[in-house]
Image (cartoon, rainbow, N blue to C red; front, side):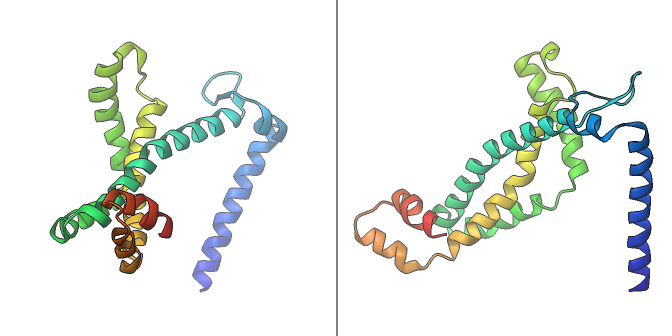
Length: 184
């Protein structure tokens, strides 16, 4: 326990020390309210809003891609896949969740940008570092988690709800989206 406390205190001290030296040079108002970040150019500018806007942009588009695909995968696994297909696909999906993020980043730079986006949109229009590649790869990263958690929730919906829906004449698709999905 002592080692943990000392390590935590050392980390906190290091962060506070570096942060205070940074804010001695850069006013906190410039950091919080300026829109340019140019750490390698003179004069240096450290406005955080450009980074916040980029983060929000990537998160929005990655969720716009991953959420429908993940939920569709969950509906397929829960309602349509045979037990054999489910036993095969579910572990494969969960293995994808364990891939290190650095592998995904390398994939974004080498495959998504170079082999997919540049031929599709034109090399001169797609810079190496772009938010579309980041959004696509982040969507691929979070897709297994969304699909797996959603499928687990849908699998726990009582069988009686499904059977009642089928008894009222609903199709498998109607049951999935109007009964199972809301109940999950």
